Image (cartoon, rainbow, N blue to C red):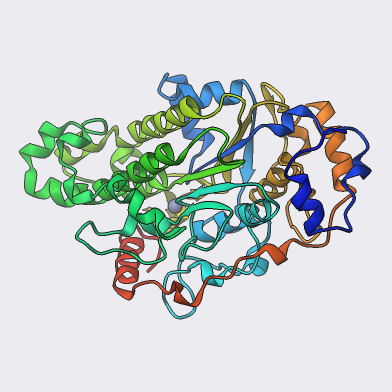
Length: 431
Ligand SMILES: [Zn+2]
């Protein structure tokens, strides 16, 4: 039987489990590293339109050579911190403890409130190095076998204020400092990929206000793009995870200008002209982010791309069209591609809680019985599916012993928390 180095710590950690029970040797495809890419609010309804227009070639390549699915969100599909935590833990919110954007005391939810282990904690604990970049609710950064760059890295204000516990190990923050993009340094011309800067210059004062949100959103995605590229190194991490929030935030802030006719939200003609193509162009930018990552990762990698929910644009209410967090659609997206994964296939059903057990299995680890999600066996070639069937027979009750509690020193700076609350409010996430 073929053995992997990671099986040794696994066997040591849970001596009662007999992996040899699987009988058949582990399929070679399970040896390849996994790259997880999270894109908040990505939705097939819009992506398929932009693919048809030739604007998203990388995601097209990825699903044509792999599998795609609608990814059912939680109900209601409104709270990204909750949903991304379900994606990472395979559990319902009542089990993982992250109920929304803010906790009972009105402060932003942070990692101290999480009560279930993530796949990076479990796989890392079993000897498989992990990189986690930008994922929701990962501040204060906790110990991981590898590196963790918390989502709070983007809240650094660029004016000398260092955020404690931004990364693990802590000294990684210094290494990444120069990769951060300060929104205040972004000019109208830097936004030329999204809009015509000449219009912005012609209405400079007003444009400055309207585009403040976009500068901030773009700066955050660029920050994590640069950090991911800097941190990736072939063979260094068994699972490399990176998350981008910009598409969701841009959709919330600027959808009204994209389809003003259908939403009946009136805006000055120059504003509509300047921002009319922002939503499709941000999709194209997300596809470029994807293309860049696909360009530098080990070509033998298995890629899993997902979103937490889709985006509907606006909802009709008795008082007319309305924009807000209710703009989310139930179905997000899932794409998987790489060795051992089926090609040009569509999965009948998949949900956000299924990602985590699927990732464990992809790294040779049986999902535990306390998970609410299920391994997406249909995504894999028959030989791999067969091996997974045997793997499932080895299921242990729980991996929550791998949960890493946030250290006491991990309290966020209250000024930074205030800034976060302000941002969440301005995007309509909270009241
Ligand atoms: Zn959203």
